[in-house]
Image (cartoon, rainbow, N blue to C red; front, side, top):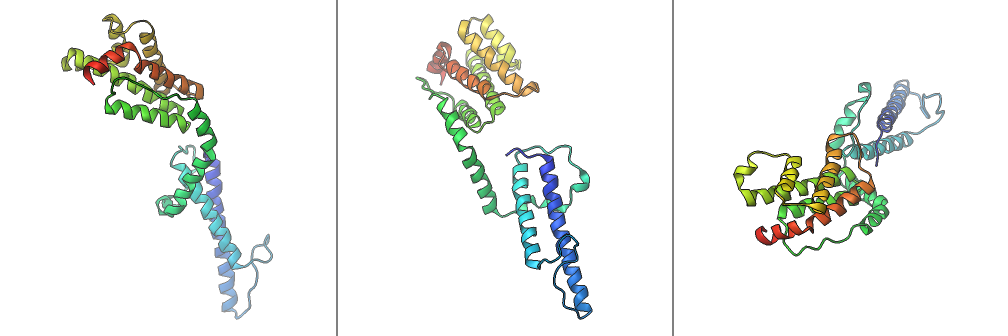
Length: 253
């Protein structure tokens, strides 16, 4: 769910308005009782007759909408917000019912499930004859999960992390910790591989592509789209299946 600040501001005003209506109703009722009068209806001009139960229902609905938006706000950045519309109600985000929170995320997942199925069809299983380091396996799983969830930049960055972890593993095992203490950047690691003849041709090209896409997601305002993330995953699979990765895995993993 993409949350806009206008939606949140509207929900806040809805809650405040519902509270205001209920307060006005109760105030009029108290005044009528003090004057020993029978009060039915509402002091609000636009609502000629209204019961307290209806106002309570409106308040409940307003808070329910607020709860849904606040839950969504956890996964969104709400900027440009009007500070005058930040009453204490926004501080109650942790007070919402856990069952409602679970229901919200279940509904979100169900709504996106057709897209998840379509995206999952595009990813082929990765078969390797060697064993990957556990940390690399976890990064790969996260890259796939991010892609399935439509988090394309996150998926691209995870693929870049896999590339860097594999290259650092290569240099650590081949040249020792002394080499790694130089703290080479990923670009420098790739160049060293080329200079030392450890990677050539297609493997070197794959490494550069993976790095560049990951860098775009990290260092620029360019947003990765579905095809970008899919290409990144496919290139990462091909990279892990490359001849030098097979040799590295056979020797060290």
